[in-house]
Length: 319
Image 1 (cartoon, rainbow, N blue to C red):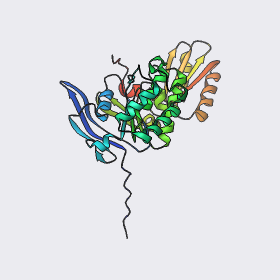
Image 2: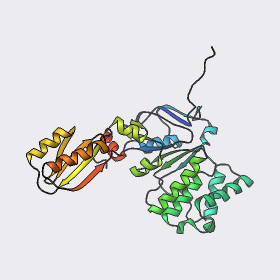
Image 3: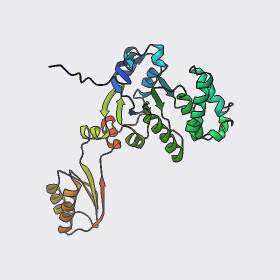
Image 4: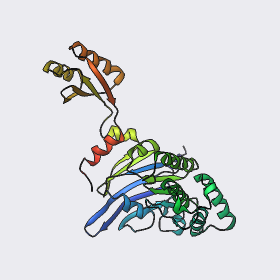
């Protein structure tokens, strides 16, 4: 019987045991993960976790002390592999005294685009950013959101297979954030693999296929949001009931018997965790009412990336 090869497709980007130190500071301590083709991966971590160091290694701006990076199965050191990466830094990297068109042309030429290819990519970039009517305006006079869009277009003029984004929506308004993610969705639909760092957990939760969390130079979580929730904080819902008068001992005992866990969060509020809202919440409410208490408000909170992140990285400030 002939054997069948069920090997997984080669990832667009693979990082194995990456280590980087600055003197006594160990910024990366054996980071390993992959980025699949066409995947949108959110890369999270507290300040000082090592995110910037990793992005700089992947962008070719600094070299790791140890470990390997592969692009589509090829060693990162090859010049051909480097052309597959686009990098958009957190800081706006544009020439303020040049127009939109001139900035796009400059970055296109930097990546080796010439003649018709450059003209076609320039026309595409202006349409993609929605700035065709501002092509000949100086970018120094643009709003922060418009500059972000031009900055993003400059990073993909050469049609990279992998796009690295460092805080792509920092300092922009909600409308600009929405437009930027529409642009990224378009890239993802064409097969571009996207890795972005962000402090906006809602962006990571809503706009990524997978999440990697880095802390103290090490990967502490890697998976989809559902997988991370199940592996860390669990899938139980937090229920808060605001009662119309102070709680007494009998109701505390009754709720404790009814639910797996119970806690008092104030004079007029109880909280507990339940597995199934539709099955358990009606019984909990009925129990409270049978004890003679009215319910002023009910809040049900599902586990989110916010809970996962704090559970894994702690509550201590990272200044």
